[in-house]
Every structure is written in C-alpha cells, then in structure tokens.
Length: 345
Ligand code: F6P
Image (cartoon, rainbow, N blue to C red):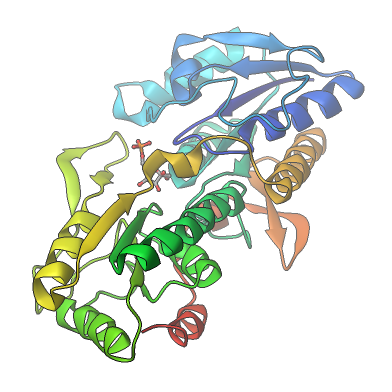
C-alpha cells in the first residue's frame, strides 16, 4: 500500500517515534510510506517526502517532528476538503495516518465521514485531553518536565522564603497541573475544571506559613479561571483565534503572583514553563506508547479499519472511532483532583 503520514497541531515528544514505528513496520510489509509535510497544509500543497529505513533511523529519542507541523485547518478555505482529496489522489495514496489532537483528528474525521477518505488517527497531545484513550503520548514527558521544574523551584523557594507560582500548559484541561502538582508536592494546584477564588488561595498560603512553613509552591494551569467573585474568564496572550477557533492562553501565573503578593505580603515569583514542556526527548514511557500507537495505526490501515484511532483502552493497546475520540474534551477526573487536594495548604 502507499500510506501517507502527517503530524498536525502543536508538536509533542514522541511524534518521531510514531513516524518511525509506522515506517519501519510498513516497509517490512512492503508498503511505501510518504511523509506529508507541515500537517494538513501539506495535504493542500502536496509537499511530501518518501520515508525510508534511513530517514527514520536514529529517531526514537528525538523530540519534535521530522515532518514539521502546522495548525492549518483545510476546512477554513473554500473547497479545502476537495483540495485534500485531490492531493490524496495525486500522490497515489491508499490511506493516510493523521497524528494529532482534537483539531487534527477532527479534520480526519470530517474527511472520513464527508469524503469517504481512508484515514486512521493516532492520539497526540501533551494536554491529555482526547476522549477514547486512557492517555495520549507526550503527556508523560510534559509531566516529567514540569515535575522536575517544581522540584528545582522547591529548593530556591525554600532558600528565599518565597511563594513560587508555576504556570503549566494544558489548554482547557488541568491534567498536566494535577499530575505534576501531585508528583512535585505542590501546595496549591489550580485547574480550569474548578474556578478558583483569590482570597481562598491567599488564605491557604497564609495559613500554611502561619504553621511555620516559609515557602509555598503554587501550580496553575494556563487555562485556570477565576470564579465569578473576581474577574471572570481566562487570561489570554492575544484576542486572536487560530484556525480552529482557539485562544492563545498564558499570563494567569503573573496575574496570580501579583494577587498573592498583594494579599499575603509574601514575596512571590513566577515561572512560566511554556514550550519547554513540549521540547526535547520523550520519556521511555512515551517512546513505547508512541511505538505501540504507530504499530496499531498501521495494522488498522492494513485491515481497512478506517475512521478509527489507535488508543489505550483500559490499559491495553486498542482502537476507538475518531468520532469517539473527538466527541468531547477529556477533562480532569474530579476524584483525582480531590486526592491531590489532600496535600494542599
Ligand atoms: O495543545 C498543546 C499546547 O501546548 C497547549 O497546551 C497550549 O495551550 C498550546 O498548545 C500552545 O500552542 P502554540 O504552540 O501554538 O503556542
């Protein structure tokens, strides 16, 4: 078969491991593998390169994506769907594997449903917010990076008797904040799923310091929101929306740090981890997960099971429909958040 692979949306550690797995398995079974460049944009322009044993060698530990990525939504342009289909035919493809999050896979699902395109998905995102799979690859790496940062901030916070606010990514889901906050022993964890009150946060820090602690660590998800008693809404970097209608989040950490310092009088500093969470090598866990996802995606193509996504279902590699994967954002399990809150303050 002639199989195309593309990576779309924000990059994420483990993308190259998926590309390697699909290519190695495909070549072993006599397939031709084409790397489509720059995500869905490449399915409009036709930019691609042949993937060979050589081009995917030495890739498993490399972050980023050799295929490059973009946040292009082909349905934003007139006749975009038809253009993708035309490229698919022009390149002589029999199937396409789209590696991405809710946006990339949302496009894949539409192409499958509306144009009958033979497409299979692989769940990628550091945010871990895709339905239908227990976990996405990239998440474990982002959590490990954030946890290491929190560990490091502990020692400097303690030395200076400061409050340290750490802003982590995750968009509208608090998975990275809860996992890294729990693993790093944060004193306050703030997530989008539970709007917070500035007075309560300040009080938690004050009472902790009244018990003799001289420093505190606050982990805040970039999408965390103040509740209605304060200013409603998200802190954004810009009012512009991307092609999928998303705002660019960021800035809640600085806002929170100022408010905490003002209310408590404790010296406070901010660290915004930003894209560091997406860069560099994937963890061993993500390398294996990405490899399993890639192998399964290739199996799905070979079996003609299109409109599906490889997934971890109840701890085992399996598959779900793309529809199931994109039906809703998978937000933080509030039972887990309650457990994390046992260690707050
Ligand atoms: O979806 C992954 C993610 O890193 C989010 O956590 C974050 O809000 C967004 O992408 C940042 O996007 P960009 O790379 O376009 O700045």
